[in-house]
Length: 195
Ligand SMILES: [Zn+2]
Image 1 (cartoon, rainbow, N blue to C red):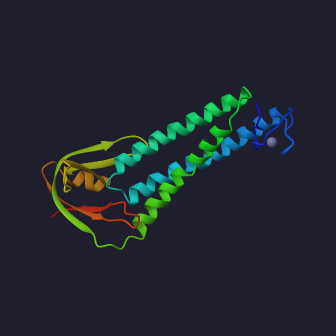
Image 2: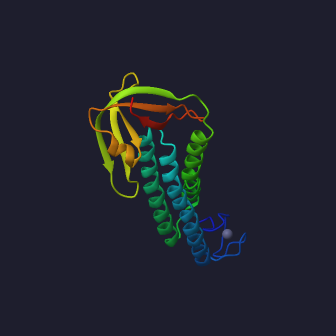
Image 3: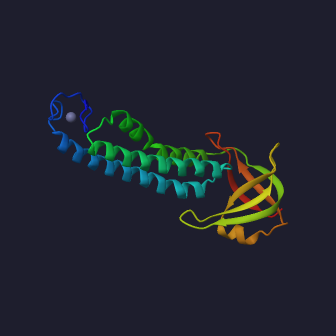
């Protein structure tokens, strides 16, 4: 063990010369910092949900899968790090990767918010038809209309819609999907209408 668990400085004795903490005290401080930063990460993930509902990207499912995987990777890394710290093993690289991942939900939420909020591009309207629908229970509680795709090389699109729109449209109904291009170039669904 060469680096201080808390400040990461090289050390030769049990007490770190840079921050003055012994390895046991550094472990306690590390855990405390981990708890706060992880809470910050979780708040970011919670903020991400309403932003996704306000300005749902066309590729919402891929983004949700990415965020879901990230969520478990980050929590797994955190637990691994706590375990290694307890065994007084080196955690410097792990710590950098872990702390590097923590702002990602905030960055993504901010990006999607700006992408939709500042969007003044004229909407693109696509007339298509509903070929299926599904509702996901749980924390996210999102509804999708499965429609025939307007994009080349794709068969279907899963359009995120509000509960009202979900109830209003039935399989076989024609539907107009209004798509905005997004300030950051992430196309998002403005709304769905009856033709
Ligand atoms: Zn230190």
